Image (cartoon, rainbow, N blue to C red; front, side, top):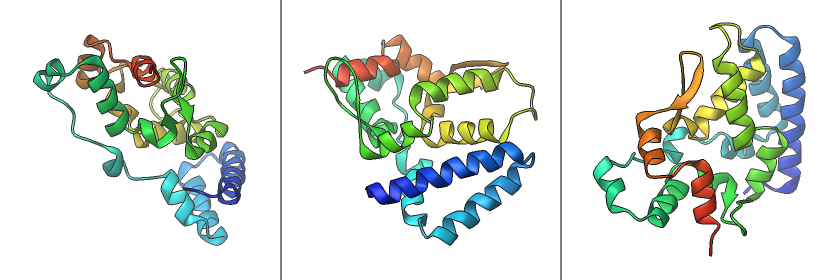
Length: 184
């Protein structure tokens, strides 16, 4: 867990890096500056929790047969527990998630689920190579948070992977997981 002071430092660094990124055309330069700033401010342990490798979050995709044997509640619980949701969310009340401390920090940086999906929908319509450093950062976050397990950009559109389509066929989209996990 990141302390509130550590989270505050990370958010200030993030805002500074977005400001710098907007002024730098070269994404690699932005990443070098960001890395140097993290090392210089000694917040790398906190930053590591924000940038967990996808292998620690990624779980095996379920097969069609496994999905068909699960109840809706079991399927929602599996997705929530194994596909990165619980990193930022906790089951809430009235069909809505609550946020963990980490989730609150992420949402302050405009990297929440809805804003990432919206950003990816916009970015998918951009011509290759025309993405800004901010768009590239959001695309990396989209992959890092596990969204690419079910969502993909192809042909200028945001769509579903084969696995995402399988879950959707069982009425288990992101909002469905939220609704199921927040029911008593």
